[in-house]
Length: 545
Image (cartoon, rainbow, N blue to C red; front, side, top):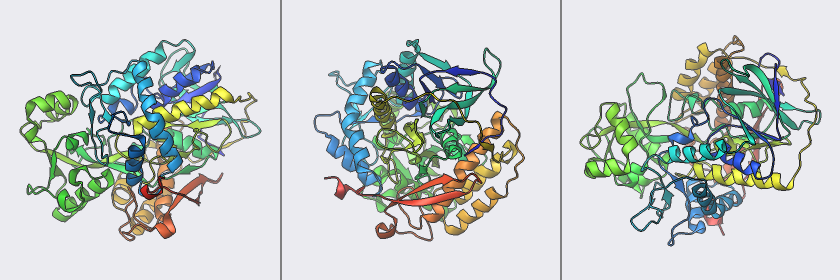
């Protein structure tokens, strides 16, 4: 176990459970934990509504239609997961998903409905049924966030600490979780480094899209939860499976950080991908053409860009007309026009960017991590639901379902408060000055298309970065990204095959005989990455029975 180099906590707050993160998973977890009567401290890195959830455009997938079933949703998920899904986890997701969406509606989320008052369900890539519930056309995440934030705000048993970066897991002499250290940014009744003490810690910090130069993730997505778990000695898995969204608005070669997403729901409505010569290319790649799974579409776009030397391809939604754009995709329409593009009459320049990681802190079906008292849900967790590639619109659903499952654990189990052991030693601290090097190296060498040579080059660059950081929010975030990137590189090097969102140029075929395994990693106290293999039983659509 190591820690970030930081001052000792100067203040503390106590609760029965500490939840880190305020997206769909964290907020839902807070509401379910409160149903057990426990007091909750909810820690969020910025303002409570500013996580990744509010950027979700597509919607929430669930078998809510009369002509749909959990079994069909399960099969579509397994196909997208490319043989590595945990079938039991997927079955929990799809069978408990409809009730989870209904609970969200009961909390106040308003979804789009048709003229009869029924939910208006659409289709996205990889789904063979219309099962995507959406709100405000393409503003589902914002509506989900709004409803959950309002529900949390009404509960006096949930104490909110905003503008707080969680630093490290606090543990007792038995190794069990006893809270987190955190740094509250700015001036207030609490500022500087403190401690949120509780025998239950739930990580819901989202992903680590900022490890790459271009991403759909907000600036707060710096892998803090995964890095915290790694430093504490917890196991993580599947970090090599980073999903790159195929259609992100291309803003030019110098653009960095969060880029505007053009939801695949636009392709679900019939928009077409064209190269710079105007030719459709997806029809020759996959039977579903533009509606193929995201990894297939991202690689096809990247291939066409490499073949033609073009920096992007085109997304053509001109046949929609203004009424469809305005009614179905008002957020995307406004975003494109803000950047000088009118999709009603013009082609939209798009290119892949990092979007979602299928892996994270390894958990069981009830959200338990490998450390007593530590749980994880949402994108920060690896439940086994997504396998090698997440099916569209399963992410919000996963946050809802597995947050509820953690709540049910706390209904039947107790966790003991013990004194914190503070004997851990600080590790390396990487300065923010090296952030751009990390991001560009990962983008150039370890993004959509990889090889042993490119991954080794990236690892050399990251290993040679100096231990020159100082205790500060920026350097702590950079150190978190560095830790996550190093594990990603090691797992990507070990997996000598192409599967799902992991593409190896030097091993272009999927190899079920050798690689139908989950790669599980942990950090040693010296900071070395140890990778082991865990056999995946089932995981393919033929194993769903």
